[in-house]
Length: 337
Ligand SMILES: NC(=O)c1ccc[n+]([C@@H]2O[C@H](COP(=O)([O-])OP(=O)(O)OC[C@H]3O[C@@H](n4cnc5c(N)ncnc54)[C@H](O)[C@@H]3O)[C@@H](O)[C@H]2O)c1
Ligand SMILES: O=C1N[C@](c2ccsc2)(c2cccc(Nc3ccc(F)cc3)n2)CC(O)=C1Sc1ccccc1Cl
Image (tube, rainbow, N blue to C red; front, side, top):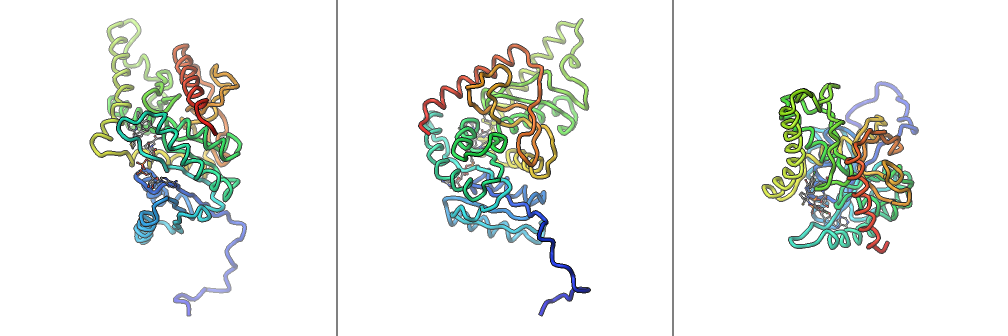
């Protein structure tokens, strides 16, 4: 007998209410940080975990299920079989081989392309209408690979790109300016990682542009100082990634929160602007035949990439983007898909 009696013959739950399902492939440091944040922020009705290690997978699933008393009700599933991801609204791919010391990025890329051949086709088959969000590195090329292997339209295949780079940039700027990082708007664009490009003109705090505010035009020394400060902060974005790896061996919390913020904007159709890796051919002087994924500030929502920001780039910024596009294009030519 039920422990609780209905107050009256309640109508069955509406069959049309859309349950939101997120699948996370890769139950490692990044995947579980993302999963934990999805649960805490109540972003899904169902969360499916996939990994190649069955014991790790079951252990992580049970450990998350045991937190149910403290979390919004979410059905948590896990399997090495991709059928568990069926009818997902969003599939987040964090699975990947780790870069081993001395390994070239091309070698790592080849290993991760081989993994993506095993991961992306079943994901796409089980969830043909899903959004794909790639986090695995090298994220820009792997997002291109996921696009090609999925057969999805490019608006539904997104890479986390410079979303993490930009969040570190915002933290460092906020720390320097002694303001809240949520009030700092600043974008890094282009290739994720060492070669990302800081859009100086995009930096504003509470709507006030920073460039020129740290120094007045008629004070050349202050202008030079300002440029030195901003360049130091841009360099610290890269150095901080290496420092975290040196200290704890991986990164998880910042990427977890940054990917969860993308998931919220996508699934709650927020139309918010995020720097994400998207099919950049035709933008900012990148030739239309260069099918490469690079990060640009884009509006995202339930159908994925909605619009791309029409930025006023300096010649140098545009040249950096075009150089990155050529680098990625040449790398992609070396891959047999
Ligand atoms: N884009 C970014 O900003 C960013 C930031 C941090 C990490 N990363 C990347 O995220 C990826 C994951 O990092 P991590 O620290 O979680 O690594 P990890 O080794 O802890 O986790 C990777 C997981 O993938 C699983 N896996 C491997 N092959 C698989 C397959 N065929 N199917 C399903 N699962 C499989 C492994 O079993 C492992 O559990 C790496 O590529 C890393 O470089 C990207
Ligand atoms: O915070 C990180 N951690 C990683 C990491 C996580 C687990 S092991 C390494 C990291 C940290 C430092 C370097 C680095 N290099 C790298 C480049 C290409 C690859 F395919 C794989 C790794 N990767 C993965 C990664 O992309 C990041 S963001 C990042 C990296 C370098 C420069 C700037 C940023 Cl914002």
